[in-house]
Amino acid sequence: MTATERDRTVLLTGCGSGIGRRTARAFAREGWTVYATDLREDLLDPLAEECETAELDVTDAEQCEAVVARVADETGGIDCLVNNAGFGVVGAMEDVSADLAREQFDVLVHGPHRLARAALPHLRASGSGRPGSGRIVNVSSVLGRAAFPGLGTYSSAKFALEGLTDALRLEVAPEVEVVAVEPAWVRTNFEEAAMDRMADAERSSAYDDVYDLYERGAALDGGPLAVGPERVAETILRAATVSDPKTRYPVGWVARAIVSSRILPDRLRDRAIWGLAKSAVRLREWGLI
Image 1 (cartoon, helix red, strand yellow):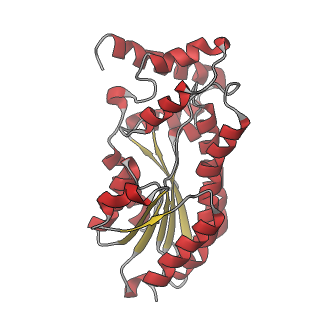
Image 2: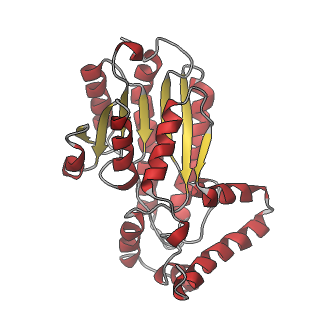
């Protein structure tokens, strides 16, 4: 059965709050059959009336395969996979343990890979081979294009997700389109959770300037430079539904500016990124944000 003979179906991860929850609702409003997942199913209770829900740990290969199989069995196919699950780690690279870095990559990189492997046969079949009939949307970040002090582990994983997105796009076209959505700062609970992890971490005095950025505020939440999660959700929906999608969708002018900084020489870009971080802190302290 093709998508023209049934409601279109989307499987989303990380829907317990923020970007994921709003994206699930955006798809549901457009008439999609939505399967919203998160690490704990109780986090999905606010979506229960609009979406099908399921517990999904993206680091568990068997659970990834089981959830994909359930969606395909219950709906007759999968038209779109949105990889959104993630978390942030704040800390200088030297201070972040190998175990925590491995956990970060397992969620942000290997999770999307597991789900793509499980979903691709269904995505190919969703339109009986029509070009672009299946779609994978990876929620990346501008930090996958330009690193930021104190978020090196997260940035490294997002760089890897960008590479995974490019490789998949090359390999699975034209039947399936693979797209990256790249927000900068977003108004969610991301910064609160990341700061809680930083509070429990060891800190080297060599990186006092890095940790000072986060303790003084604004470097992680972006203040007025942040966009709302609904803006990101709208972009994800557009990337999933337009007939000829772009390969990447930076969200907001700050994201576009950071992506554009890639044309600068590395040393100059380093100074510009440090300047952006310190400016946000000063504006917060002056009461302007």
